Image (cartoon, rainbow over all chains, first blue to last red; front, side, top):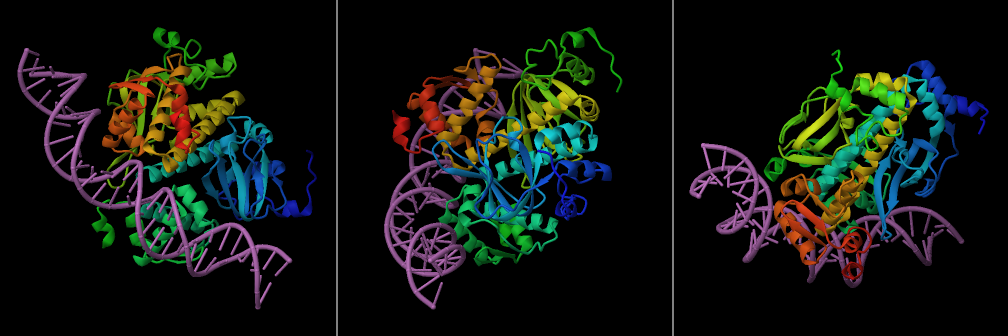
Length: 248
Length: 248
DNA sequence: GGTCGATTTTGATTTCAGTCAAGTTGGGTA
DNA sequence: TACCCAACTTGACTGAAATCAAAATCGACC
């Protein structure tokens, strides 16, 4: 487990990482980032379909996405998959495993992804001596909790159109946070996966995409999405169970 | 903000608390429990319908339920309420507020509840010097994350009967964890609230309760629940989209 | 460039939960 | 005890998404 710093590793340091402000190091004093860097392991890229870890596997590390995209999913008792989230660069995966000995879910690359592995035992030890890191971890967990709650709400009370609108707007925001266009982007997952996440079958996904397009809210070409009428999208996604308001 | 220890406070200490093993102090060394006790504030009971805190209010503390039951809910943009959880003694509320300055949700007593308030700034300071507490906090957050994920799955892919079966079994487990009967218990919330949480309208709740009763899985008298056929309940809740298996 | 399997689309039909509209029950209180 | 309002139930009807079935498109790989 001893690591020898290589040139490439030091070049790809947290300090220089474009994702620093989204990821674990955000708001840490410079010297704490240095300490964090000391335990981060950069692994060779995982290609599309590859596992970062599998459900049931012993929990040792959390992972941060550096490039690419990752889905986390659970295999249910009856054998079907439930996708619990999609993860973009700067996001941390595996926090749901801290409480148990094993990972409750699997993490699978949606496209070739480079990943930082952070051994949890070392992170724990480090954060005992590093209040800022400890606070950062709590904030990240709290943010995740909030995100899950908002997904709950989405799934319990919203129509297919609203679910899709919300999730597209959320991706828009997340891409924008990463310096990409908020209005034109490429979804990294299949419609089947997105539908699974939203609790909708592929047929409904297809029809719902079409309906949003017919209403002039978005323009779709395969996985390429363009948000055409961002205002109307927001009206559909939030406000307005009065569908008049959305029809403006 | 200085506190003077009173007799009743020391009597109701974390050390002697029946809920110790479910709550924050679980697994802490004795002296750390003592330190935690030093910052816990026991407030006067909140009666049915009263707020522990309101959405939008400044985040200062997290709260642990000591007796009674609490719901947390958010007011949506369009004005309707979404209930994000029900909280029994030993459970910690307000963790979703750590990341922002304000509480994203309100906490309301479902029945008269006694509450421990834990000022977060002090908890943070204390946990900087108390590794065990810090680990305990991470585990609690991780557990919450897991619970939210399982709710997500419940809401996205399950029928009304399954949702109700799952939630009744979860309450059964939670009551059992608190030393109460797993097979006979009283739900602390209205059907309207439970329906809101499950994404079902009251009419559907009523019909679904009736169907579970007709199948001989449970026996219902108002809020009093008796689980009659726990095996069949589990078959319905988990496994079995082959409804044959459940019909055994 | 062509082939095969996976992904996506389209159409017809069914079903489960939502909506609307009345009751009924029950707990709190005057 | 009687009244009242909220909570819950019941029934008829509607509608959105699931299911079933088939075709079309895409894209990875030879």
